[in-house]
Image (cartoon, rainbow, N blue to C red; front, top):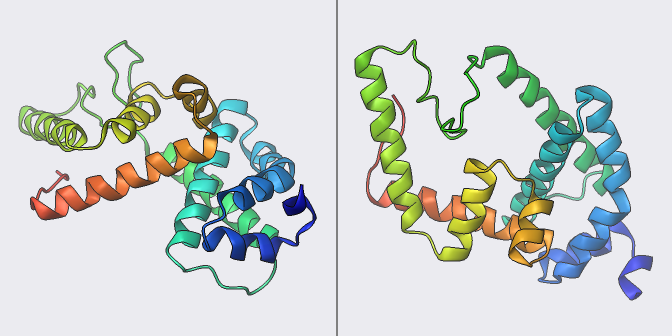
Length: 194
């Protein structure tokens, strides 16, 4: 394949100009290094997979937004993103309250935290309801990916297999779902914090 021989910076430019296959080549080319970096810190395959996929969501978002600059090599930039997301994972884990793992546990919120007082519980339930309504306004393909990722805690590889699409397509649908949700939230002046 012609793309396989191209330098990273050419593949990045081609992807920015609409060639989706260029990103697939970059992912395949650098997967092992990025995955190994993350795994060496978290020592858990599932968490590594999630951070790896989040790394490429951030890479895609940055490239599509035109915020990537050519200072240094693509792999160094990608490794820095992976490192930062790994550190974010540990920061979140250190301040995250512990929840009982039940069938109705919802990763989107902390609604199941029984230590919340009644007022906070009501606010959290309202936020949860608002988020569900916003999700309902999304196109079906985006809603499906978002449900699988957030509510069923599936990896993008599993989502791709379940929807019969590529990982890239699943990543793109997730990205657009989040963009569209943000837009709907802003348009309707929803406040999703307590």
